[in-house]
Length: 136
Image (cartoon, rainbow, N blue to C red; front, side):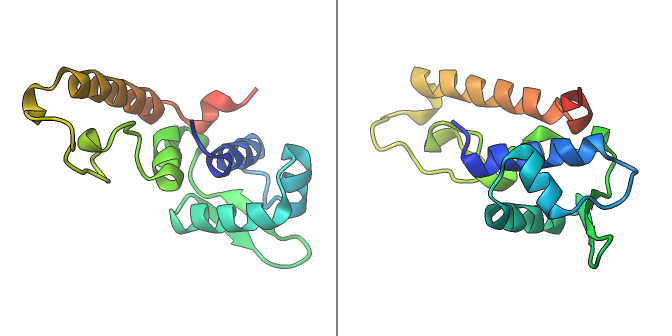
């Protein structure tokens, strides 16, 4: 399962994608409309900003806005940023690999092959899924 943090990131980004090109959206508006605790949302949006997806403006007319087009932001990038890995087991993870303690022959392990296929298919779906597809 993905974390609440990842879910909140996707909700906030979907809201910003709906408002793409209309200027900054105040964080309070995003938090209220998406029912996300504002303090938690602040950290999430700062992390997404560091990824180069969001911009921000301070002041009365300030807030956050997408600097990339919604069709350029993949859900795979968001999930990997907040979850770290797509893999369900460490021995197939590209980011958090650890050898399997139970497996005698990792290359021929049938369990590993199944979970590698799950990871690859999940990643493929997430990488080709973009914010513009989440907009009503």
